[in-house]
Image (cartoon, rainbow, N blue to C red; front, side):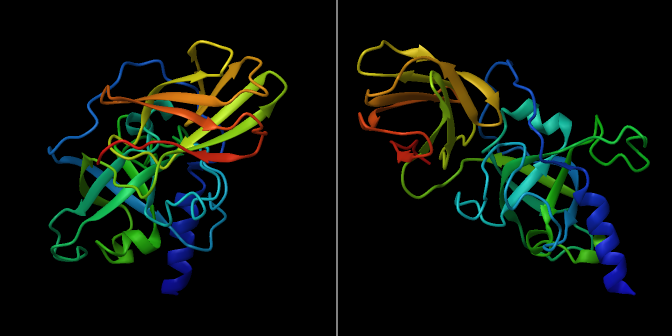
Length: 262
């Protein structure tokens, strides 16, 4: 009976997680890290649920291959910032509740998805991810590091922290013809990206636009040119990776650039 309840609860949480694209945010950069703990709530989805092992509203695709593993989170509307928050890292801990919390524990997760609101329910009566709720949806493997599964929808505290990554940030180039789309992941430091510029050997620096999540695009003829990138994170820091992609790059390839300090 307990296993049935777990699956039903996990299913109800997983259907709220968005695999569709979320529109671009044009808001200004926000501080990338803060030691201030804030209040929220958290639920989980079961490992067997068809969530975003491939997909998700940030565009990272296969989270295991992208290096994020299971330590990920879907965020409610007020936290997701229309996709700009994708890639940011948070420390999450269970509020001191003797019934459910595992004492002295916390987890670090990366924002990789959007928990869609359900306006068929009020925010305080079933609409877990509705505004103004601050809500995290976690894989059950991660949830159970700070609380037992019976806690289900439980109070937590979270704070923004810097991301630590191995290797450089990654640029996956996609598109067709003059439409160039670049997915940027494995970003250290702030973790999320506010602006991107691209440069070919026959162009100046060209401003890219956020398509969705951390997918950035531009209409420009950049074939047969080595490509450089300038990436600005949400804390206002910029880093330039010159000639990341060689002259003979092709769509579908991934290249590694420089990295922010963490």
